[in-house]
Each structure stands twice: as structure tokens, then as C-alpha cells.
Image (cartoon, rainbow, N blue to C red):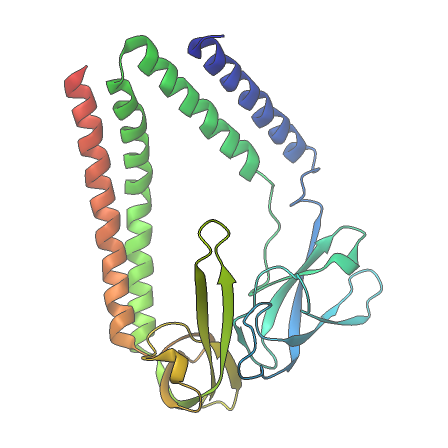
Amino acid sequence: MGWDEFLVLWCAGWAVTAVVGLVRSLAGLTKAQRTVRLAGRITRVREPRHGGSRLGGISVVVSYRDPVSGQDVVVTNDGERGETLTVAWEGREIGVSHPRGAPHAYRFSPAPEEAGQGLGWPMGALFLVYAGLVVLAALAWGWPWTLVGFGWPWAVVAAAHLPGTVRAKNRRLGRLAAMESVRGRVVAVLKDVSVDEDDGHTRTTVTPVVSFTTRAGTAVLAHCAANLPDPADSYGRDVTVHYTPSDPAEFTLDRAAEHRSEETEVTVNVLVIVVLVVTALVGLAML
């Protein structure tokens, strides 16, 4: 079997996958559509042990209302329970989800989630079909078609996202400027050691845990892996925490660093667009 035949089968196979996924979505049979999504609330936060592990995130107790029985259900995030909660306080609203008919398999997310259509896999399959077609064109008409085929579409996608990135940056900068500042303390330093299976190299990950109380009286515990000098020896250190009053999960120890990061993200987005456009133009020039 030659490359042409292989790529034709590749495109056909992924096209069938995309069609099946779209049909399942229209029929309401995707995993996302069969997931029950609820809003839970943290009722208890357990302070981590100094020297413990960051795996599993901050230990919490969560209460949510069962839509079938109408009763309150109390659960914890012990074990594999979805996204890791790295910021927690009593009263915080988070997302709780579980497969339809299986409430014991609940999962957490930092915020309540809206119901999805399960179109991730079909869209991914369509991209693989497109990639196969681009490679087929390159084999038939020359490799510069690869530059054209991948350069222009990705440039258009990046350009379409640029205004949203700029708006998000401006909103973020506005929130940074409106942040309130309080004193906090590093109440624990978590340490995790992993060994690379290939070369045997040992890697140690250090995660300080910061405790602070907002001006409204909310006691917050949070993993703080950025903008803290010498984190391994930070246990017991007093720090200044800047947080968003409406959402203490959005906090930083260095507003200037966050400001620079937002500016850099927009710059990188623009550079990516420039590189993709140049790539496509080079491909056109070589045809």
C-alpha cells in the first residue's frame, strides 16, 4: 500500500468517526450530554500537613442538592475526583458532575459547568481529515502545499482569537488594578518526588500553601507555585496577597509580574500570526 492509498483510508476513517460523533451528538448520546452537572458548595476546608503531597489538591467537604431526591448530599474530594482544587474556602461554589444514574462516580471542577454537546471528538476527527487532505495535496502537487494548507487556516484561527485575547487582557489588567491587598502566611510547603522512568532522574516539586483572610472575612487556602522567592524555605513566611474581591481564587503575590505576563501573551499571539502568514506566503511563492 502506497502513501496515497494510506492517506485516502486515513481521511475516510476519520470522516466516518466525525459523522458518527455528530450523529451521537444530535441523538443526545455523547458522554457530555449524559453527564449530570450540579452546583456544590464547600462546607469544610482541611489545612494540609506541612511536608505532605500536593496530589489531590486541598482536601474539602462539599455539599450539593440531589435533583432526584431533593436531599443534600455530602461528599469529599478524596481520591481521583476530577480537577484538582488548588484554592478553597468555606462557602465557595464549585462544580459537581456525575454520569447519569451513577452519582457515586462524581467529579469536581473549580466552577459549575454548563452542559456540553460532546463535539470535541468529531471536531478533532475533522481536523485529522483536513490534515490528511493537505498531505495528499502535497504529495500530488509538491510539498509547498503543506505550508499553504497549514499556514493560512491557522493564521485565520489565530487572528480570529486575537481580539478576544486583547479583551481578556484588558479585563485582567482591570481586575489587577482593582485587587485588594491583605497579609497572608505560608502555612505548609508540600513536596512531591518523581523519578523519570527513562533516565532515572529524580525531580522534586515544591508547592507552598498560602493562607489569607479577605477583608470580607473569608478564610482562603491556596496552592501558590508562582512569584514566591525560595519556595522550599518559605514555611511560616508572611506574604502580601493581592486578590479579586468578587473571586478570591484569582490572586497573586506579584501584580507587576502578572501585568507583564498578560502583555507577553498578546505579543506571542501576534508573533504566531506573523509566522503563520509568512509560512503561507513562502509556500505560495514556491508553488
